[in-house]
Image 1 (tube, rainbow, N blue to C red):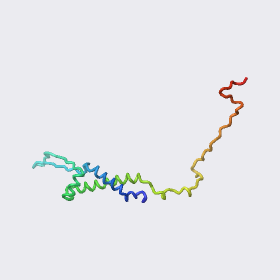
Image 2: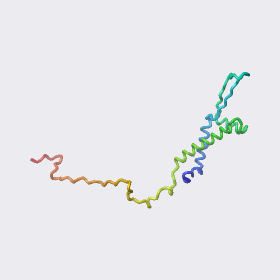
Image 3: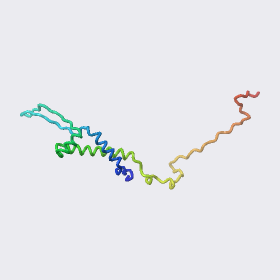
Image 4: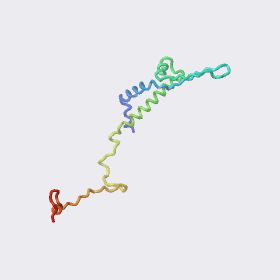
Amino acid sequence: MRGRLRFLRQGRFWLNYLFILAVTSWLPLLTQTATMTDSGGKVLTTSVLKVPVWQSWRILAVKGPAGGHGQAVAMHLGLCFVITAFVWFLMSKPLLRDLPDPKHEDNAPSSGDAPVPQASRLPESDDENTPSSGDAPHE
């Protein structure tokens, strides 16, 4: 397991992670709803504002964590990391020392294995009794 996580030390993984963050920055992870009501509590208008992640990053850098932008940025970082790491984990190959050693394996079939069939030889034909394509049959 530890050998398959070595991709975390590679610069290519982190460049890929930054690329995924940049590509997915237009997705809206924060939705703000504004509702206007009258004095009696009756809803007059409701508007929904979907904020893309890049705007949450900008607001977080300028104003700090306010209005849920910090949570949207943290969710963006976490989701992108989990998905990128999962794909890299699936694509990574285990180390050779993790594979079984073929020198120490027993080549004898176990009780659950079916025997290997031997190649059967075809019987040799008698050339004297078999007519060739150009010969006429003997009478």
